[in-house]
Length: 147
Image (cartoon, rainbow, N blue to C red):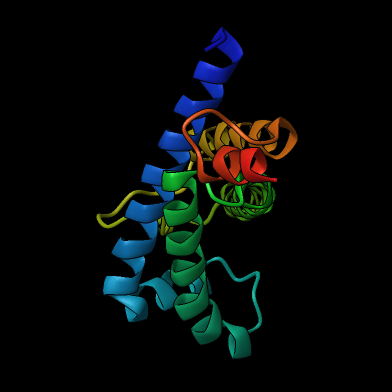
């Protein structure tokens, strides 16, 4: 396995863990997550509840797919879009001086430029997966070999 493959497989594992953890934490308490979404003041009130339920489910689905390497490039796209969107929302909140919980995981953590940077790193990892194609140790590679 090349150095590039090792980095991509590690990125996939990290993103899988992050998305599974984040999704499960949010799904455990959707009402708190809805309050955190509303605190950003960037989403219409009518969509807050839908997002509070749908986003954790999407994060869990993406995390599970990445864990086994299924639909990796599609998951890379979703990760890139989600984390870039999260980074933008957090940057907006920091810029506006909002002192709010980031809503990333359980436990209070105020939005900051460090959170924005962290999400952009995750977005970069997602972009790398989007552009990678089937990886070693993945269902995608197994499916590609069967064709």
